[in-house]
Amino acid sequence: MLQLVDNLARLGTETAFEVLARAADLERRGKSIVNLGIGQPDFRTPQHIVEAAIKALRDGHHGYTPAQGILPLREAVAKDLARRHGVEVDPDTIVIMPGGKPTMFFAVLMFGRPGAEILYPDPGFPIYRSMIQYTGAKPVPIALKEENQFAFTADQVLSQITPKTSLVILNSPNNPCGGAVPAEEVKRLVAGLARHPNVAVMSDEIYSQMLYGGRKHESFLRYPEIRDRLILLDGWSKTYAMTGWRLGFSVWPKALVEPIVRLCVNCHSCVNAPTQYAGIAALEGPQDEAARMVAAFDERRRVIVPLLNQLPGFTCLDPGGAFYVFPNVTGTGIGARELQNRMLEQSGVATVAGTSFGIHGEGYIRFSYANSVDNIREAIRRIAALLRD
Ligand SMILES: Cc1ncc(COP(=O)(O)O)c(C=O)c1O
Image (cartoon, rainbow, N blue to C red):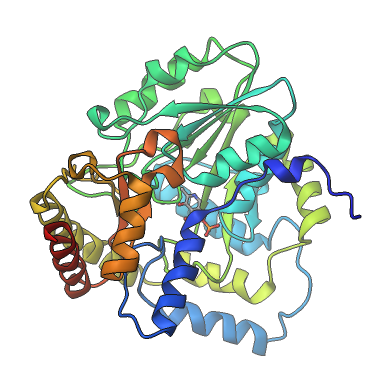
C-alpha cells in the first residue's frame, strides 16, 4: 500500500479544466460545442513573438538560464512596469516564472502553515484556496459581492485580518467575476495595512491590461510603504495570448528574493530559454495586437451582457475587466452546478458554475467571452431555447 502524505488530500483543483475535458469528449462524439468555459484568449500569439522564440533556438539559446530569469528579460519587465504603473522596480527583485500560477504556489508555500490564516477572494481563482489548504493554513474567504460590483473593499479586508493572518491574496481585475477594484479602495487598504506590519500581500494583477469603460488599473506596486511585503503576480498569458508558453513574472520584496529563487532552483531550475526571449519580444515589440485583443474583448463584452440580461432568470452586471461575466442565475430556480451541466449536456454550451470558485459563487455562472461574437450569439440562443423548454 502506497503511503501518500495527508496534505495531498486537501489539495484542490481547477474545475475549468474538467469542463474543458468534458466538452472535448462531447465534441469527439459529434456534439456541437460552444466553449465559453475556458479562461484563455482565443487569439494566436502575435507572430513577432513566435519568431523571437524560433530565432532564440536557432541562435543556440537552448540551455539552462539563471533561475531568476535572464537579465535582459527582467530589465524589459522593469521597463514595462515603469511604463504601465509609473514605478521604478529593481530588475534584481523580479523573478521570471513558468506562468502566473507558480507565483501563487510559492507565495502560499512561504506563508502557509498550520495556525496561520490566509485571506483570499471568494469567488476567486480556485488555486488560492487549494494551496492554502495544502499548507495546513486556515483559508479565510473575502466575499466578493455583487452589490460591490464584485470588488473587495478595504474595510472588508481589514476587518478580517487577525494576529494569525500571514498573507492576504488579492486579485483585480478578477477571475471569475470581472470585478475591478477602484483606486480609492486600494489606497484605503494600503493605509489600513500600516496597522498590520506583519501581514504580507500577494496581488494577482494578471488581468491588469484588460479594463473597460475608461477604468484605470491601480497597482499595489505604486505604494512604496508596502513594497517590503508585497508580492506582485503578473505575466504574459492573458495579455499576449501566451497561456501555453508558460511564462510569468513576479516582483518580490528584497528580503524574499533569495528564498524565492531557492524555491525555483528546487522546483523548475529556470523557464525554458526560447520562451524568455519571446517574452522580451512581447514587451519590447509592437503593442498593437495586444491592444486589438482587448478591443475585441470589449466589443464582445458589450454583446454578451445585454444578451444575458434578456435570458429569463438571469441578471448580469457590466464587468470592469478581464474577459469574464458572472451573471446571477438565481431567478432560474436552478442551482449553478445543475445549470452548468444542463447547458453543457443539453445545449452544448460550456461554462463554469460559480461554485467552482468558492461557496460565494452559488447562484452564479462564469461565462468567458474569449470567443467570437457569432459563437457568443449562438450560445445565448441555445441557452434561451433550453430555458424555454
Ligand atoms: C486570476 C488568475 N491568476 C493567475 C492565473 C494563472 O495564469 P497562468 O496561466 O499564467 O499560470 C489565472 C489563469 O486563469 C488567473 O485567472
